[in-house]
Image (cartoon, rainbow, N blue to C red; front, side):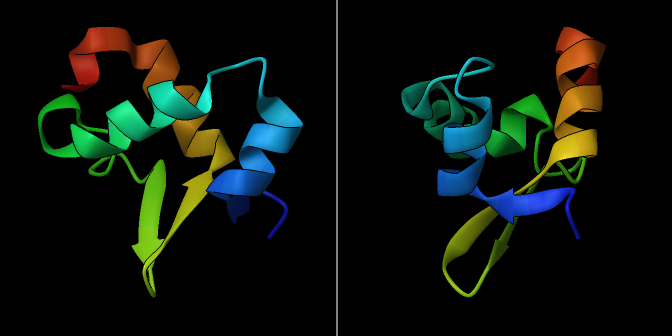
Length: 66
């Protein structure tokens, strides 16, 4: 399960990809931008998790994913 991590862990490991504010904006707008439907973020037990390969695919897809 190295490809799934908490939001906090993702930011520590991949902070150069996106800021915490940016990721939280993506989460807040998840219904319109397609990030949740892509499987890139998962909410479980009140906690957000990042599926790293799916997030990579979602970012590379650009606005087509919305």
